[in-house]
Image 1 (cartoon, rainbow, N blue to C red):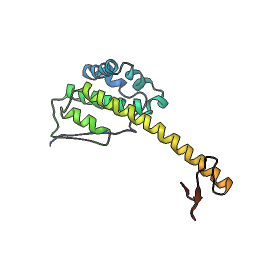
Image 2 (cartoon, rainbow, N blue to C red; image 1 turned 30 degrees about the vertical axis):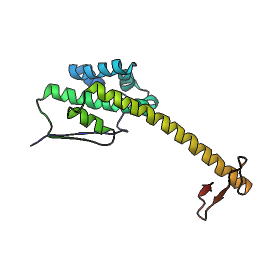
Image 3 (cartoon, helix red, strand yellow; image 1 turned 90 degrees about the vertical axis):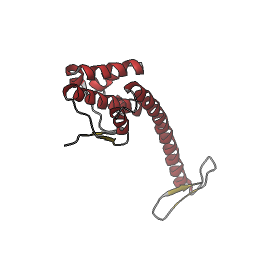
Image 4 (tube, helix red, strand yellow; image 1 turned 60 degrees about the horizontal axis):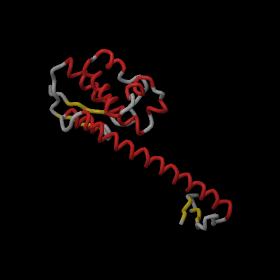
Length: 165
């Protein structure tokens, strides 16, 4: 049998994750401690105690899942002398797979992923603002018969989809 490591993506986070590994594995503890030092805040506290609302924010959950994946891998390596013949990850899990394949250090992967998460967090907020503006525009269009106060022209299709120009 040949081992194959697979790492999860965003959505696998849950408050309390990693606390048992932190308490039982020195190598997992070292990963969480390094994450806290590199990031400049207590990611371990967010992972172990939540709240869920914070842990699910993109800027926290991505680094949290990566850190948890690496901590779990190190706890496994501490107990078993096994190396994978192949590593894979689902979306964000690719970073854990790259770490497992020794493509970069934990800290380098964390810094890269932290920047990615920060950029994605900003983009998500901008997209939400655009979506809300679009909905406002569509509601205004419905009420005014096709024109908005901003001078935008809009119309509804037969299946009631709003088109704004």
